[in-house]
Image 1 (cartoon, rainbow over the protein chains, first blue to last red):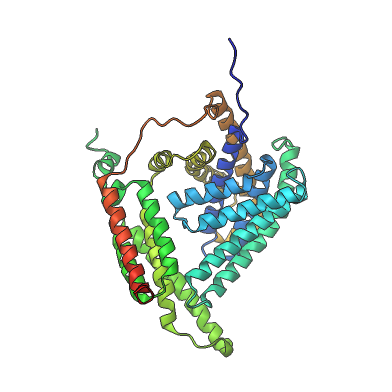
Image 2: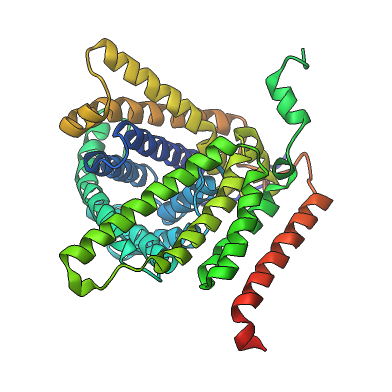
Length: 183
Length: 254
């Protein structure tokens, strides 16, 4: 009996499951840190972003393929929309941020270079926040001064993302030492 | 016994919003978000805000809806307070005019109402079913299903880690997060990431052993068609949105 030649898929089941698991973990960890921090707490805001970015770094180290950030952004936005009250208008913005982030990683040396991954994630975080702020500007365009407070909160959050890039790398080093991240 | 079951009571008597297909609710959500963004006049935005409020209240989860309104109001007041302080400290920024706040507030109200109607009527099982009805490719369906499946598990895991930390004398609260952020991160983050990676490995092995992802396309055991209620809701929403647009742009059009 001859076996039909099976086409090799670009995305393996294992990788799709890792993306889903990390998207869930990022959402839950961010939400719980925000709640435990007691609302408008700048320290918990920074901490939440450190954790989210560190998890994203671990994810791109675990799934080193073009499109990982795009798929992560798409899944995150879709489930947020259906389950957690995310905004439908955030979806195209997040997709653009994901595609640009993935494209940047490809152009700056590919998924094998650590610094390309870190810069790509940093750019993805920056773009997703900038696009969200741009959308917020459209919502409050009659009184743009309302956006100043949101911009300050986003800026504080982004410092957490920048710290998260470093902590994510340290964490990957530990996970590699433990044999959990192999590449 | 079915009579004593709370869940069976809910499933036997679904509300109007729950009866709508998730595709209809997503379409209403997307259209409302786009239209609200383009409209600027107080009257068309007010019409849509009232209609969307009725849509959200039809869900009958009044407490959640009013808590959300309270949160929007608090955020709005905080933003207005910041603007007031800025205009006092820096007079060159101009005066604070209350009427400028109306349109952004109404826009946010419309967005929150349509999103609440979608998010509140979705449970884990119904979302998984909804993802199937959307006929998404496996690349999107599988991670989304895993994400939905794992959110409750991770909440339980974090609670267990938090309880184990309490036994060891660490309490996770706003004070410890504020004054010991690095310690908190280390204590919470490390066990949960290791747990997540192990879970994803186990799930991936189980999925591969079951042959998931090897078929050419996903087969659907149940096909769902839109009901009369979906067409009616879609028609009402489209009429309202078109009406609001006509109200706003009738000078330019006619």
